Image (cartoon, rainbow, N blue to C red; front, side, top):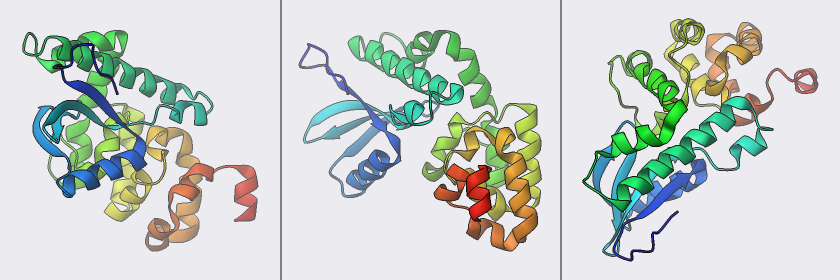
Length: 224
C-alpha cells in the first residue's frame, strides 16, 4: 500500500494475489470493511473504508512476486508492470481527487501498456458471452482474473470456442485451473492430449491448480 505525507489523503492499497483477495472478500462479507463506491469497473478499483478510514483499493491483481516465481515469464512481467502502472495512476488520482476521472489517470500512467490493456478489455464481451451467455464488460468475482487474458487475439478466441463447444464445464476447468488462461495457445497441445484420454466427463474433474502447473512437462507426464 501507499500513504502520502498528507494525513487526510486516502491511502492506496492493492490486493496482491488469490490468498489476499480471499481474505479481503471475507472481511467485506463480515462487514469489517465497507465498499463505499466503485470508481472504475474497468480496472476493478473502489473506495473502501474501515473504522472510518477511507482508502482506494485495486482488487484481483497478481501477486508482486508472481513474475519471479514464473521465471520472469514475459506475460507475467508485463502484468506486473501493468499493475504497478495502474497503482501509480491511483496515487496520482489520490493526490488531486476530482480533478480528472480515475480511468484517465490510470490510462496516462499505463503509457505504452495502455493499448494492450484496451485490446484485452475489448474482448470482455466475447469471453463473457461464452461464460454467462450474455455479453458484458464485467466478470463475476470468481472470473475477475480473466481480465488479464489475451482473449482479443484470434488464436486464443479459436481455442476458447473449441473448448466451449466441448462443454461449459470443460472450458471452466481450464480457465479456473492455475494460470493456464495466460498461455492457452502454448498449453493447448497438452490439454488436447488429456482431453482425448479422459473424455468430456472426466476431464473437468482431472483439472486442478497442481495439474495446470505441470501439464505438458515430460517428467510429470511420465508419472501420470
